[in-house]
Image (cartoon, rainbow, N blue to C red):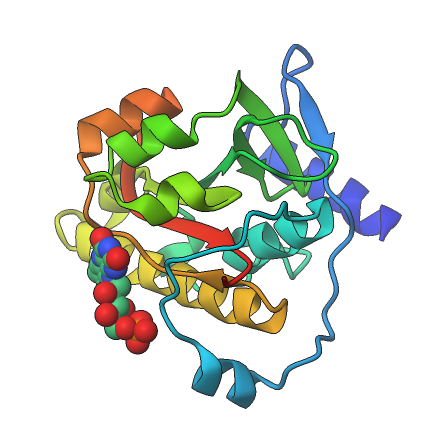
Length: 220
Ligand SMILES: Cc1cc2nc3c(=O)[nH]c(=O)nc-3n(C[C@H](O)[C@H](O)[C@H](O)COP(=O)(O)O)c2cc1C
């Protein structure tokens, strides 16, 4: 594991990929499990969009597992849990954390290379995200939301216009992985595509384009 981490750090530094800057607050996530309680067939058959959640926090381990399913690194060369056109990885995952054990409410960016969170903004921003998403209650009531954003240029500079299509395909892979991972953890989610892009960008303090918001919690 440790050798793997060193390898990743060396590899990504030499590819010019930015790791955590020393001034940024970084939270290392608990290690992930690659054996779960549910078969992939059970997870596929049970998956449903769930929009009502219990008033209960998520554990940091659950958050770690969800983020890993979305973009985690599973191969020494940087291969991830989801396919990506040209292995260019144009998607970024933000965590809007309201109620997570051992994590302050705030907005964080997932760093796949280090399996860590980088704090962007402190404070509970769930209501702001809900207001940016046509007031869909599931976003206000879930303990967390994962927001999947795109940096289109990473893919379009190689593939031109067609790259946009690839980015949209990739967000589907991520959404399904999170859905199935949530199912396997006994959690519930839904993909949200109806929101005001500029308002979501403002909440996250990013120029990247939001594509999906996925509130996650325990089904009510
Ligand atoms: C691209 C896309 C956008 C969606 N946007 C929303 C949304 O904004 N709000 C919502 O409640 N559900 C949204 N959904 C979830 C669908 O309503 C849901 O998948 C559908 O009703 C089928 O139900 P199931 O997922 O339980 O099979 C979206 C689904 C997709 C694929």
